[in-house]
Image (cartoon, rainbow, N blue to C red; front, side):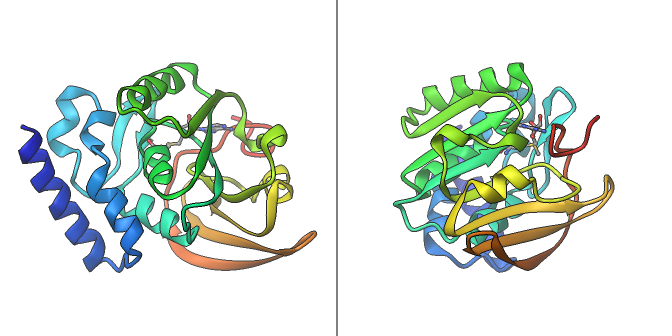
Length: 215
Ligand code: SAM
């Protein structure tokens, strides 16, 4: 069974390359992390297909291409401290943990956060710190971060997250209305100075919190 999943994982990576993902470290991380183990058993046969899947609580594990695109946009080299908002299944946190020194991840739904922690412990990820709470406020005690990824859709980039970025740091986030968003990269050029890059259209579940949607 594990061999079968390894073959499917290789096919998924091939598809990511065809879709334009180039960073060899990102592709290696996708070759390594067993995406099927972040899903309920019944969904595991679909784990390496390129679409989102339900993880309970009306939430989803994002499409592999979207996870790869967002991760590649952060340009991680291995020494970074990264913040993820929206732990969900824990899959993207595991990918980030393969590419950076330390990962801090926040999830607002306690049951999802607990399940993700269990999966990450089973896979022996010791460089991921999880927290239950409103990620739109960031994680002030651990800031600044070299990179931040928000895996839910926001009306705007939350101010605390921009503030908690290191100078030169990168924040990737889907910004738009409830139906459709633009995946947007903010690069912090100086204190209160940012430039934006557009990574194309996307559709995510809502970021709910003080600096996101209210419901
Ligand atoms: N990164 C996840 C993965 O790899 O499985 C997928 C995340 S899912 C698309 C978005 C997640 O963001 C949901 O689990 C949702 O509960 C969470 N979320 C929404 N608003 C949040 C907030 N303010 N703080 C933390 N998590 C939030």
